[in-house]
Image (cartoon, rainbow, N blue to C red):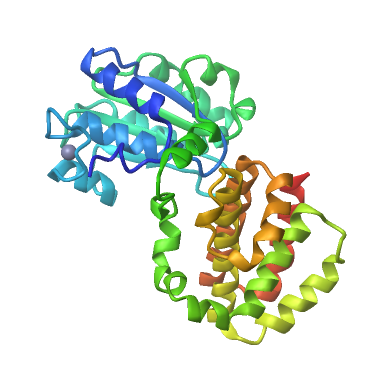
Length: 326
Ligand SMILES: [Zn+2]
């Protein structure tokens, strides 16, 4: 499947880049801005695939050798750069400058995707200024950020800015007759659980807790934070990692349901018994906030794989959620 078709929404942006390629009017440095989790990086990677695709009619085809390698993160000319701690360091910028002295090794174009570009520190940022302004031919930069205002202004001014909005996604969801789950790959990763409605009902306690947790983020103070944390401890604290995983997973499904309600697709709600609560939440929450909360939930869930206990993850998640909703 064409990699652009795998990205929900952002039709104008995808068309823009397809046309720019055909007319050879692509700039070399772009800044992608917009909320977290909306598809900026995925789009940048798809463009990297488009630039290197072996298909002339259907780039990025998603199936040629080059597209496959890029999707696996195994293409030597497509580099994703991210902060190792909280900053993108001078030595990372150095590696970019080193690589760029040579022609692309494997493909037609070398692409650098700099994720969370606002984490470039002043040193690494300044090192890249000249290259961003005029990279050697065949090299492209895609800087990704949800915080363009935190970016060095000298960097920002050297890039063509492309703004991603959740309106683009909602539009696509509304047009989608099935409101399928293609936008929610993480649902598929645990899909057996979702498809099995009986299994769902067996986890009512955890589901309810997941709902309460989200309600507490959106309307803090209805229940005391401590009360909720105690409940987490009680409901999933002793069930081991699996229950904790389901807890996070349920929150993701509820967030997905909220998005379904916001986009007028109530019939696509999975947690139908929660419809009144979902409607109430949908009135208080923007699509952007849904994505943001989802990101926090996924971050929390990934803490489990580092062996962090749910009792420690839950309070942090709650506090971050409340902060994000302010
Ligand atoms: Zn291809």
